[in-house]
Image 1 (tube, chains in turn cyan, yellow):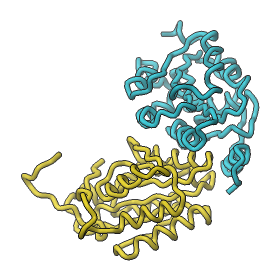
Image 2 (spheres, chains in turn cyan, blue; image 1 turned 135 degrees about the horizontal axis):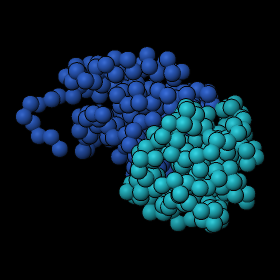
Image 3 (spheres, chains in turn orange, purple; image 1 turned 90 degrees about the vertical axis):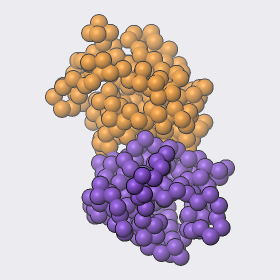
Image 4 (cartoon, chains in turn red, blue; image 1 turned 120 degrees about the vertical axis):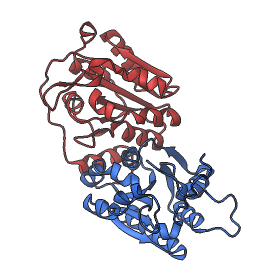
Length: 196
Length: 189
């Protein structure tokens, strides 16, 4: 599978977020949080630094509350493996404004680069499809990342799950804001809600 | 996970009314997202919420999904509630860091097992530590033991959550719900 893992994760995330408009972005802990922070802080970003396995469901909660706002979850393969049941919950709710992008390097990057189960064949896009999500894909080239970037910032026909196979290269840890209460309040205000 | 509680009442006549009082409180509290793991003690309430046009029920595969969902709901401007059984509280512990770090309001209604007349020894370890586990994870607890107390307890818990910004679990005791009766040789669905 090594030939498929060619995407540069920073470049891919940068392209996904280049024309983000009103999109709310939730990040899974570890490298996806750094990737999104590296693309530039934004008042519609909600960074997770923990709560492993919770990124997709946090995105679902926002998507159901704000059906007209595109919601993009950017998470990793290890984080998504821990919350695979979320695919079934998302499929059942079928929010048209939710996309989950899994940045899959087949590694636990935070803990010493141990292989995740995607390295030995666990296929997160296929799992999502088997859970009932109709729009799933695995992407290995930048042209399709650019095509995905056109879709994720629009309300579509249903939830999308996209797995991006990325290279195992290490990246700089870009510090995202860790003050959770602040980014919570900041996002609510950006959505025109009261702080509390 | 064993989420078997007594079967939900088919009709209200002569049956406990406290689930309907909880539904009234959730309606008055403008709850929009109702996350749940199926549970017999909550079955009547889940069905009421499912039929309520102003509410959306979100079935979970495991309870910690509901903690993250409730956080997301608040970020998006919806009030939510998480319905689960005491056995599921243990599944939530690390995810509750999301609530604590970000100071999210949280309202969860927990039906208790493993206490009053429990017949299943596998329910007792989690049931007997549910309150301690929640408190240790930064979640306040209030308990309802009697049918007449339920509405008031849930109302004040909802106020603490959505006005006071607190994370609160209402423990609906097994004494209130009724101990599950296991009939050897009985029919399982």
